[in-house]
Amino acid sequence: MGILYNYKQQVLKIIDEADIVFEVVDARFPLETSNNYIEKYALSKGKQLLILANKEDLISVEYKRQILKQMNNKKIVFLSAKLRSGFIKLRRIIGKLSKGKKVKIAIFGYPNTGKSSIINVLKGRHSAPTSPESGFTRGQQYIKISKNILLIDSPGILEYTNVPEEQLALINAKSVDHVRDIEGCATYLLSFISKVNKNALEEFYKIKFESVDSFLENLASEKKFFTKGNNLDIARASRLVLSDWQKGKIKIF
Figure 1 (cartoon, rainbow, N blue to C red):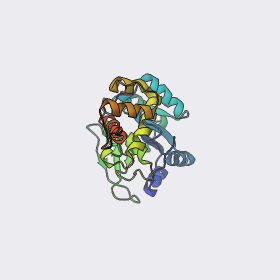
Figure 2: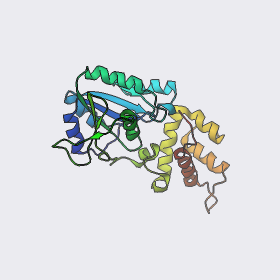
Figure 3: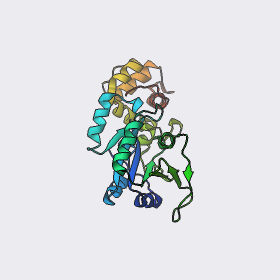
Figure 4: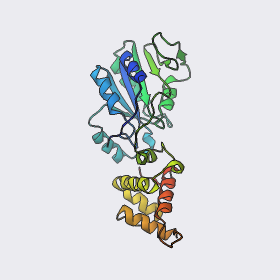
């Protein structure tokens, strides 16, 4: 399930200058938070590409296996910046990829993937940004990770664009208060959850899941959500599901 992103030329320039490329994705939604174009660009330039799947603490071992299959054998490391887990393995991989030589690592990721948190862990207490080199645009940061490792980060240059709002709602990039098609987004969300772990829906709402439509109808009935015409208020039930999801109440991983 691919989605389109708006990429900036600055990202491609950074990749051109780097030896290794890190792409940070949300481990819960690796496909929805990755950028196939930039991945292919990096590989076409002969760069070593490594996917950093952050928020490992929010997924199960079984779901991790599913991700590995979905990612088509891409090189992937699971991390939790929150728990600081997986970083020993990452540093070992960096050592193998660099082969003891001085290298530059480009790192990019979209909002809510935790790119900044990963950078902070890698930096450690004794690291600090270095002076920008010539030929790079303002705002780009160079962070010395070790004697031979220089991390290149350009804050805020990648943004979601032309992405269906139901996918933005799923990954919390668009809040329920700003969603236009509330029922469409809820339908997409429920379809996604039912494929991953429909038991989570049944356990949380105490309603059997047979289909998206019947689930929303039963939820509206259970919560006594009715319109002025005394019909089931599916829109209100949809808003409740989206709100519960974005607040982290529905645990599916």
